[in-house]
Image 1 (cartoon, rainbow, N blue to C red):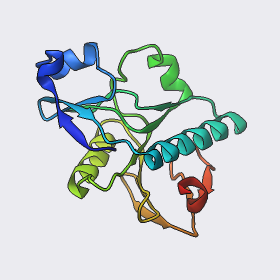
Image 2 (cartoon, rainbow, N blue to C red):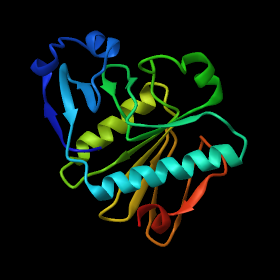
Image 3 (cartoon, rainbow, N blue to C red):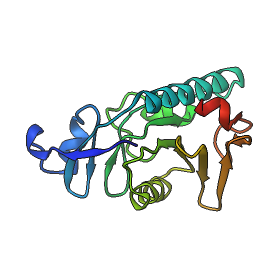
Length: 182
């Protein structure tokens, strides 16, 4: 996730339904307002690319299929969100793969936390994903070399020198924290 700025008036959007019909790039619909995701740094972009690459390579080599996306819109129970990286299972690709906006959360989502993000906002976003069809959320803290993997049943923290692994989605995927974040 990156810093955000309210921009509702710039696109003449007044509702979540408007956003779902045509979500402007790098935006979310949050608490009744169109919000632009801004402030992406080189580090954030590099980590986003790394995670996309490793998840995509793994889903291909393991034969699990599905699709991996970056900054792709989805609907939670009450918001319009765009996770930094997301994985969609083959079944959901077949069902929703051509939609403008996924009508639920992605089974596996990742948010890369910037230094300006508030902890409450990040936790709220993870909870939203899980309450809207998501099964697993990765909260990536580049500055601290932490990755928190959240499911409905557990919260696990992986730190520098450890190996982070998926808990429910993309079974068998793992990668050293240092490899992903450096």
